[in-house]
Length: 118
Image 1 (cartoon, rainbow, N blue to C red):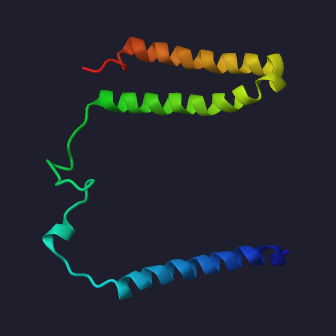
Image 2: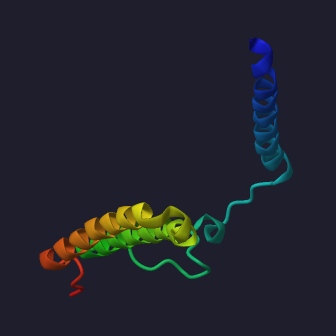
Image 3: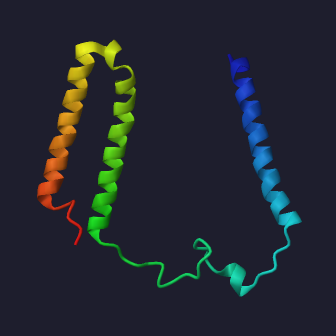
């Protein structure tokens, strides 16, 4: 029984040795010369502006969560659209229920003002 786990243990051991080797190599081969420019946070090549602990509006997070939810909707609808004919009416009814639940959520969010950007 343990022979079936031997390849997994070998792979785990090689992975650990590889990770430790890469960490050691970066510390040995890369001399650290600290300068104020190197110690600054990197923000897409721009000089950082303002405090890093700036507050965002809750509306921003509401829109972000909505985007994730409806992005996941597309992920589930694309495979259904590819196999639509093979799934038949049962698949159509199941996806209709799925979309109806999402529409109810969208209407709820719309009425609560989650889509209003002020």
